[in-house]
Image 1 (cartoon, one colour):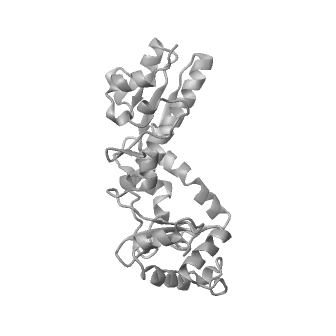
Image 2 (image 1 turned 90 degrees about the horizontal axis):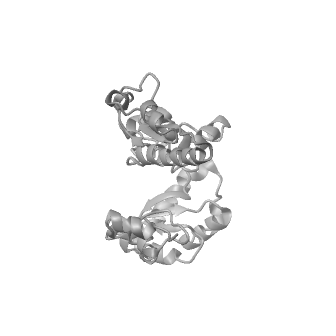
Length: 277
């Protein structure tokens, strides 16, 4: 059982976990909310942006000279909420099979987004991450881990974190490594400006072609409309009729169920997933 109402609604309807587990002790009852089942804000309204704001994660996103940038609603709704609800429900199902007792899974998007940001809380505690946006390794502060505009208005994503990858990036940009030490943080702003100027000399796809097959970790930033037609996505059938296909993939699952599931009716999909015997 999975529900996403405010705390107490299912109980008022007569379908709370206590009532349902009395009828079926093995039942796993998944509850996904923004603030959780308990706490001062449990009964308050909100949306993804509110939840990730309270977790500390939102503060770390966006350029340093502007307000924090909303990361769509991927962090709270889908990552911290739905995905962690799935993890909790699956874990509870394993336990229920072994013990005969179900669990109530309280998946709060605030909790989940805080967990997703655990690395950055840990780095900050060690003095390795600043609360200032745009000055850290993974928030756009590092010139070798950010996006750049190109001559045609497109963008490329640069993720040359390792020294070998960084060397390949410099080679593609025709920059002398002696003039661009990778971890001289004080020199990052000037180096980023140099990279910006370099990427503005070619179109996005020209840069993608130049870096193709290298270890520079430079790739085009595709729009939602472009992504389904990229050769890699087409080869993997990552999209079906312009929409993302099911993921992750499972060994032994019939291709009709895995790659073309979006084209099947529910009964057809269930039949394709069934295992004989």
